[in-house]
Image 1 (cartoon, protein in one colour):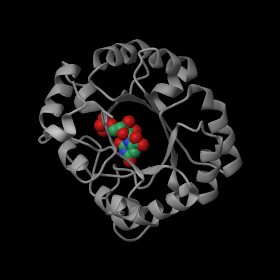
Image 2 (cartoon, rainbow, N blue to C red):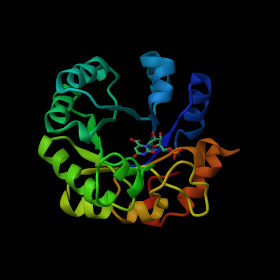
Image 3 (cartoon, rainbow, N blue to C red):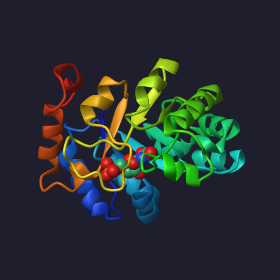
Length: 232
Ligand SMILES: O=C(O)c1cc(=O)[nH]c(=O)n1[C@@H]1O[C@H](COP(=O)(O)O)[C@@H](O)[C@H]1O
């Protein structure tokens, strides 16, 4: 499987469709998140899915189990390849999401957002380093019976060790020297894949480039042959 999913974060469905078209054959899939979904809803998702790239629907559900289960049931017909919930919503909530998802959808739990560092986490009342909280939520996600987690490149090696057959989504990925923007726990594509990421989520370094397909090819060139084997 081509491990690079491009985060298409825009409210503009025409721009999103053009990016998905440009990236066909280069990306493993596209990730549509809250910005796109709030503006375009399921019609927008179906429009992008016509581009024939797998769609990762990143709606980061976080609510009581009944509400999350019913929200997942409401989008199940979109058949996303990957779907996110917040692991902090708890074991029952994650289990409800998994029970309502189509069987082939990988349900993954967001652990500690890659935009948070230790002091941001402390401000939410969670003391300790991000990797400790990631470890705790990884265990919870596994016990809940979902497919994997979302974490930064700094935590993925430990998560993979603890859960060898888990599915690991790593955002906060930046080619060496790229602008990190609002991301605080970042890794290069090569580091994240070497450390056990199943897929990488990369947005602005590709979508803000003057030539997104060219930026994708540069990222592929930064990987070793084993990692780049699925990228055209
Ligand atoms: O769940 C996610 O995809 C996610 C989790 C996380 O901890 N950090 C994170 O950045 N993301 C998403 O990954 C994408 C990163 O985009 P860029 O920072 O532009 O590469 C965005 O669409 C975020 O919503």
